[in-house]
Length: 406
Image (tube, rainbow, N blue to C red; front, side, top):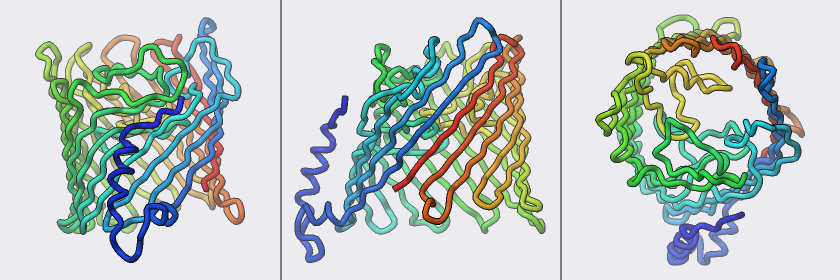
């Protein structure tokens, strides 16, 4: 069911008192000077398993999102988004898609107030957000969202600073559940609708983030997140553009996890990446090493299914295996753009100290953006091969997406 959130009414009430200059004289004018947009989506996903006892699955889902933003008045702006999903066809006896894309209904994913004063911006309410430790995913038809409050500033040259507080997390479906985010108050009795906004722990999560560029050669990103009374996390990466005749870079990243419960073991992850472009082809290689010993707690990657910033992330599994204690992972790949077609091929290997949990993952990503009168149409195909040490889990995964933006 479509749930109209109380925060929308509060924001509208606040905005009704905001008109006092000659440019905008009424609430309706503020609305009419805004803009409406969105995307129509048609997704088909298919999974095939080598194990004869495992049921293959396929699903065809249609829907999309409609967004609205008012014009700006004295720095104030309102925004909102409604997402909808309709399952056109499904063959999934084992419910493998229940927590990711098998959703039918509507959800109000954005309803926010934004205020900008100079180079400082405040935003509060339901909104999409992406950062190393708190990030929504848009890889399924329903894009995740958060209920949050944030202040960001670009006052200092080449530096972006933000602090925020996140209270709730909207999942893809109301049957979503993620073990590494088990402190979220997920809905365990979901009916198959898009995900609602679920409380993050008892007191939410506080974060602070600093991004800085130095002399156009060095980029530094850092973030601290504290899921109050649950876990504290630190993320940092640095990328250096090499002084070569072709585009090339080296990068390093670090995760640190500190659990508030004494019985849980703290952990960390260190990663390295290199890349260069030659002849229109991009080459890249990444390596990550998670600390700890076999069977200990994994490194905390963050909240949301977009919070996979490790250098060995993938399409199908997101590379979550890289965060398991004692796991060595590496990735090799290449990418290229030919006309309107973008392609990427990469191989990722996860060496877990637990017997039977190693994984080798092949991934192909193709995206085609039409041009001319059809420039708003896009097609993408993602194909993955999963080769586990435990052969019963071997599988292939196909994802096709057709979108039209308006």
